[in-house]
Image (cartoon, rainbow, N blue to C red; front, side, top):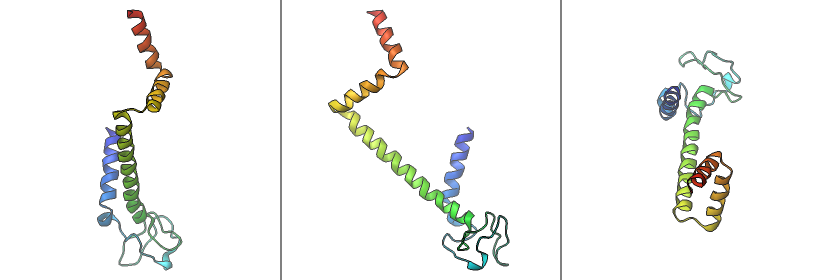
Length: 121
């Protein structure tokens, strides 16, 4: 349950980054380069909670926006792998079928299943 709450929180924070982030993603402030953790920003702007990088970009804002990229990559890879698995298992090629048998032969569950089948025969 804790994992689900964490995952939902990360997804929501990443999707809502443009409204949550204290600074725009690409805003450069050379006067605040390498600012430490919890350093004050400009008088009319919020503080830099995670500090800034060498160009003065807010690290918290960049982390929030980076979550979008990570989620996009994860979703793309998951969809591609699902499509590849569906294509290869629908009508397996002899090489794929042989590889599946080879993998199953090394798993403990396969040995239990085959021993049970032999004992019934």
